[in-house]
Length: 67
Image (cartoon, rainbow, N blue to C red; front, side, top):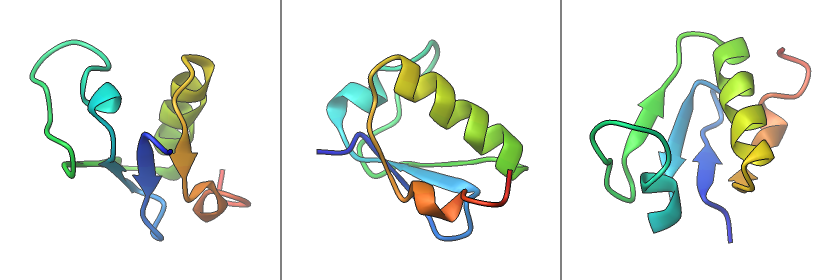
């Protein structure tokens, strides 16, 4: 099961798992919350860091060829 889903524009990610809502510091988003990035490069870095920590992303095909 994925922790996050990347939307087709490649700039927004949806939180899919409770585990994803616990990542990082600060306020905790709810499942279904959306996090927007200004650039594809920022999103790609978020994905790389998340995967290094063991998180799973759906929709990575929306980043292919854009970074």
